[in-house]
Structure formats: structure tokens, C-alpha cells
Length: 551
Image (cartoon, rainbow, N blue to C red; front, side):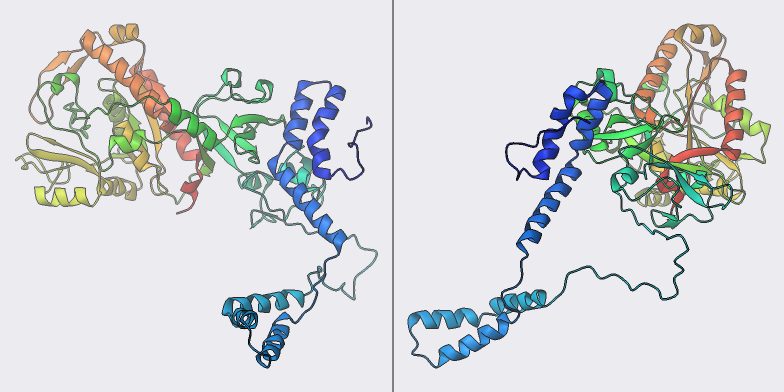
């Protein structure tokens, strides 16, 4: 280790030495990675603050400060009594007035209380029956700021205890100096871990899902591009440190390499997105006029119908509210459906004509006892061949509007002076029958369904390329009427262009809400992928927002 210069005088403080250390070490460091680590470690604000506090305490410890007296309040009372017997000059009157003020009396009383207390640490007495031959037990409570422990753990094969297997350099455990390899882990974040498996304990640590793509080589603000961590939207990252308000340290979940990389913090990235986000032009959405062979109609409007239908699409939340959210990261944890749990709500989204209803219909037909769809509400009169609660739930306009005011609808709209809508209770009704509820909605509605109650799994049905659309849909037809018998018309070039454009807008604005993307190039292939996804959803473990694990 090279000798270090500590300044011209012998009184150079630890803080000044710490600040100068990286520059003095620079000639002796071989790699840029090690230099970056030194600057990060010695430049941490929390470390600087801690050193400053240490120096202040050390200074006052040298001074050995002691109270001048322990009875200032009594002395003040004696002084006031003495002054009363003296000739009352203007100065004595002013002093007596000051000594009689309640706030000064309170101050002197607090002084006496503090002066009479002993602030030296009090240690509990040693037990009388301690066996000097036994190994000592060390109990540590490590208080962290929402960062992981910074250590890997394993179960001891002989004792069954959870022990520290490795300490991550620069992590919370390493910085504390209190935790060492071989130490037994008893508690994490206040949760006892005696009966937990190592993989269960890992879930207590902090993981996030990235909601945007990031390449440090394209980031002009990052202090060191080589130290950055690249990731894609949907990647799960383990946060190793949040000490720096601008640059967090993280690594990819499951990555065996313990080295952390820099990523922009949530607050910093939100600020950057907000500054460069273009002004979003809000487009009104309207009721769909597609039919799906007697199954649940989707409240979307095809391009042809926009020419004639003036009804505006509505939702309990506005588009303005949705687009104001800036997706960066969300904290997640692992979740696996238990046998007694309700099934997760499955939400399907996609542009008009992409084949979403056909895929949903094939799922329903494959197992009508396992899959279910919601029954929409309407205010139009019931027809002779219809049954209440089968095709629709028929209610009055007054009741419909009341339910709208009470936020009971996921989506609703008006068509030919009648209301149509999908209610939250209709979703609950399907789930209560121990069925998987298949729901297709506008993508901006998805965020309002992302709750502990529904735990939705969102699947985006995406169209293939324009050339493949022309090839695979050349004989397909689209029906564009809602309640009246409509004529099936072949897809036009304009339909294909609109489908591609709509899919692009959906994916760019709401892609961070999608758990799965399926390209419907071939219906049979897309259905097979969809069915496999459903089977995995019911048996495997998935990352979900951490708020979904607690009501």
C-alpha cells in the first residue's frame, strides 16, 4: 500500500483526508473500474456526513464539556428574591421581568434536567451462570435505507441454520463492518427467518421491474458508461444500493456476477422523462361495433363506424390522468397462486381486427367450466329471444348513471341513446365461480385493474407485419355493427394500416403494463402460445407488484 500524504499540518481532519484520498490513489490504480469504485465509495454523501459527525463528537469529547452547575433554576429564583430587597433601578426591574418570564423558567428547568443526567452507555450485567468455554453469541440489528443486505446466504448442511455465505463489496453488510461470512441470519426487515428457505428470504429483499429500455452507452449524464447496467423493459433488477439520489446500484435478478452496475434512480429518470415527454394529444375513444358470435362485445369502434357514430367513449378515469403517469420502475416480489386462491384476472388488449375475439372464443370453447367472460350491462330494452343475465344485464338508465357515479364500471359508453358497460361486479362474479375471467378492454383502462383483488395478467395481441396481414387476412371479413345485423366486409388496405398504427400506439404508450405479447400471425399458433401461457400462469411463479401481496 503506498504511503499517503495527509496535508501540511498534523491537525488535518479525517473528512479532508477522505476527500483527498481518491485523487492520491489514482496514480496507483490500474483499471477504470477500480477507480470508479473508489470514487463511488469515498464520494458517498452518507459516508461524508458520518465522518463529519464523528469529527464533531471527537472534538467535543476532547473538550470534555461539563455543566457549570446543576441548579440554574434554583439560582435564578434566589437571585430574584435577592433583587427584590434592593432599590429598584431600571436595570433591576428589567432583569426581574426577564427572570419571571415562563419561557426562561422552562429553559432553565430543561438545562437542569439535562445537566443532571448521565449519557454514558449503560450495558446490561453479565449473566452469573455464563459458561466461559462456550462460543459467544453476537446479535446485530442492521438498519438499512430500503436497500438489500448486500450478502448471499445459504443453509448450513449440519446445523440447518441460515448463514451468510458471501459479503458483497460496498453493500450494506460490508459498510456496517458488523456482518461476516459464517454469521447466522435470524431476521430480515423485522421478519424472522428461522423457518424459511434461502430462496424465500431472498424475496424479502428489494427487486424492481424496469418499465423502460436503458443503454448506459447512450446516456450522456451517467458518470461512467463502463459502470452502467443495460436493461430492457420488463427486466427484473435487484437493487444493491440507493445511497446516491441520482444513480442506484443494481444487478440483473439471478445473475451470478456479484458486481453491481449504475442505473438512473426513479426520481432522476422521472424528471428526465417529464422534460422530454412530448405533449400527448388526447384522442376520444368510442364504442366498438364488432360482433363476436354471441360472446361479450368489445367496447371499441372500428374505423368505418367513426364516420357515423358520434358517441364518445367514457371511463371512470380520464385519458389525461393515465398519460400523466411516467413509467420508470415498480417494486416487485414473486407470487405463485395457491390452490385456494382465486384465479388471476386475464386481460386481453389489441387493435380492432387483430383476432382477439377469435382467440378468446377458442379458449372458452376449449373448457367452458374453466374459462368465463363477463356479462355486459345495457339500458336498451330486452328483446324477445334474450334472457336477462345471459346476453346482457338489463337495467334502467337511472340505475346505470348511479353506478357510473359510484365508479362501478370498468368501461362504459353510449350507442344510439343506450348505455353499454362492463362492471367490476361482473368480473367478481366470474372469479367467484372459480373460473378464469377473460376480459378485453381499452389499454388505458388496464392500470385501474392492477389491484391486490384482481392481480391481472395482461396479454397484448399484436398484428404481424403489413405484408403478413395482406397474406393471412386476404379472405377474412370484418363485421361492423353492434346490435343491428351488419354486413361482413373484407379487410381493406386501410384496415391493415389502421391496425398496425393502432398496435404501435398501444405498445409505445402502454407496453409497460403488458406481461405478455403474442403476435397473431397464424391463429392456431397464437392460440397454442396463449393456452401455454394460461397453463403456466396457474402453476408457476411470477413477479408481481409488491402491493399485490398485501391487502
